[in-house]
Image (cartoon, rainbow, N blue to C red):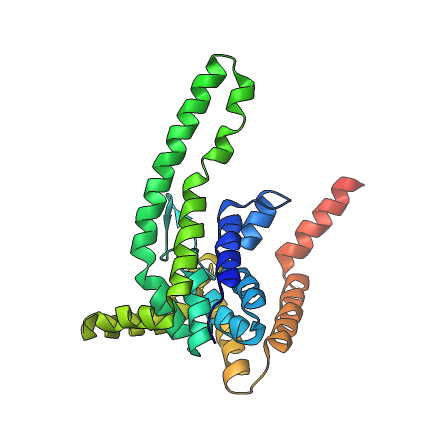
Amino acid sequence: MQITILQAILLGLFCFLVSTGMFPLGWLSMNIMSKPLIHCLIIGMIMGDMKNAMIIGCVIQAAYIGQMSIGGVATLPKINIALWFALPLTLVSGGDAAECLTIALAFAAVQNILDTVGNLVKVGFLHRQDALIEKGKIKQAWWFPAAGHIWTMVSCLVIVPVFCLAGSAVISSIVSALPPQINAITSTFTGLLPAIGFMILMVTLIHSPFQWIYFLFGFVLAAALGWDTISITVVGCVIAYLIFQFTPDKKMAAAGVEEDDD
């Protein structure tokens, strides 16, 4: 199985659309489309292998579930472009999520450079737009925000199709050419990424040591008793509802609101 030219072009096109957020509903759709699992969903549709794409996507989403941007710096490496050629190559070669992440993370440093250059290009267009607005040339200035995406379009429509058409053999040879120590570190890091993603999320959700008990209780239900995610979620919602109902502070606050309404 090989990636066709049409599939490579579609992958580059959708990578560009997702990277620029050119979808309806503005920030809401951009926030949803930026998730790795959504990327994998579209890639699976283009490649015609939805099952394996979603299996790998769930692992990658678990790794990036707690990703956040602090001061403009992401807590995990950016793979929003690399994923569009790493996952198709992995599907073609029959690899797993670890191989996909290895290829994507190897390209993360290059993507940081591309993002930096792209931001400089966008700043140049914005300064030109400000100058035209000050001169009252509104009709000439309206298209400059769209022109700022030229660098992103070039990056996505060139890098993604070229790497996809190069084939998994070329990418595998590049990865195998790396020193064994680097490959060992990368493999270990990719194995730890899901745990790191969940821990970043836990830091934002857990506000007291006692709340770790609920997390451990859910872990026991999944690991020891074999419960699925939906069953654990239902039990968690029931426990949360009971805690809310039988907490005195919550009941007093609710009573105070009712008195104020009267």
